[in-house]
Length: 95
Image (cartoon, rainbow, N blue to C red; front, top):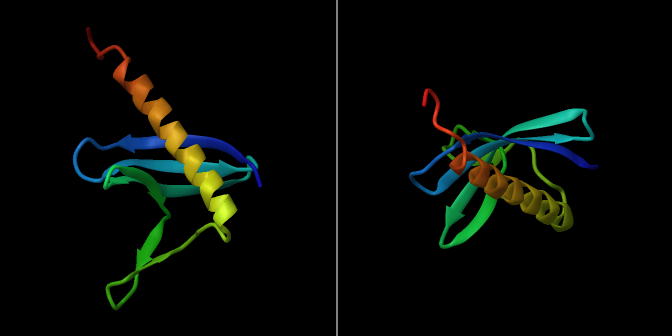
């Protein structure tokens, strides 16, 4: 399975959540609402989840093994920093 596209949907300045991302696999499957989190000076991703009746959360999609999780996390965090750098250099609208 190949990651064919990563789109940063929204950046956040406040709090530990830094971005919401969509990832496309093999040009055929999109996974939305992957979150980029920064906590304790470490960046990591959180997969899309749903709240259970007991108040806990359960991922609705997730990597099956550590190798693919590391590959996905590395690609998403790299795209986050690239997108952040691009956003910082964009011209303000209407100037």
